[in-house]
Image (cartoon, rainbow, N blue to C red):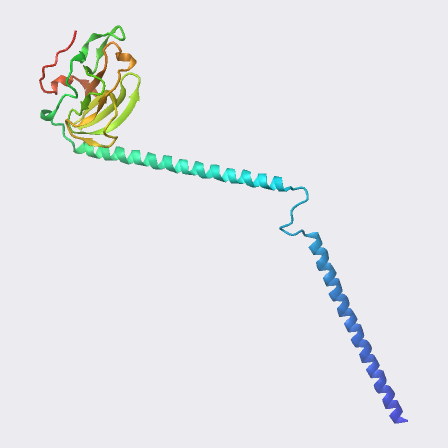
Length: 251
């Protein structure tokens, strides 16, 4: 009798254990299934990064890419242009500093001065009284000398000095300013095909450039060299600093 009761007890225990294991397995299976379904649902809600939206066509995407590439190219070109302009400005500033430094060391040796060109003085220096300008048909003071010459004739530096400025204006055309030192500046106008640049030091007698066609201010006078000498930025008579030559002033 006791043996039968023992067998029945063991059978109940085994059945209970089997039932527990089945319930546990069922719960775990349900959890895995719910987790899998949730993952699938989230994946469906979040589109892949490479997915192309239904309202975007290949043509639109290509156009946007081309526009973006164009903008990048323009930005790159603008940046390169700005950098080039900056470098050019720095170069000019360095040349100006170098010219100023050289000018402070220079001394104007009047004994070595030469005429910028051999020719007739078409319009003489005159700041005390007016003289007649044929092209302008008027009387006016003249802070420079206008010396006649043929187009393409060589124009020489008056003395040793540093070129501080090259400019263009309607009256004297291509104009070169040369710092001679001691406060003196030589100005040469009506030039072309210059052999030097700003910041260069030129020796007296070297060829600065050549005579160009006259500007509209000197049509009647003809081709010439506009030559002015300044002392502390005030015009002085160039002939007082140039060697005596057989050059006559025209009436």
